[in-house]
Image (cartoon, rainbow, N blue to C red; front, top):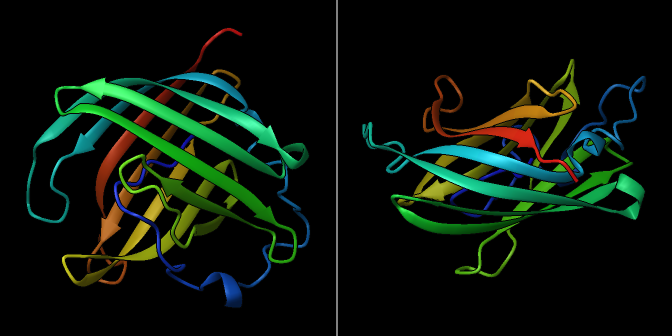
Length: 182
């Protein structure tokens, strides 16, 4: 699935990519995104004004296409969707770091056209959690992107923000994916 971030990722929340610690030696992880290759119908719910107390959500219907790079150790995801708030397009570049045994997820939109510093994380027990630190309105926040509920034909992901150092999280983007036949 495409990690759907509405702002550019910054440095890793718990540990930046330069000082990241290796994940468990038992699990390599370089093929953890293999389930994702193909085309997915994507239903997204997006909180329009995160961290403001807003409860205004919009629904979007779209398509996510994920292609394999480097034999599966990287991939490129393209997302396009439409809803009451208009049309949105995102590009997700995800690559595996064999030294840290972690995935890096980075994003761009046609309006911004540049990648930032990636979310960093791992899959464990069927769930992928990826973190970064960003700035919204001049305030540092933590961002968590999670993928779970993975089957051959479905998956779910959410993005959440925390403005209190990770004590509480506000979910602001929910995605439900259904694989389309090739």
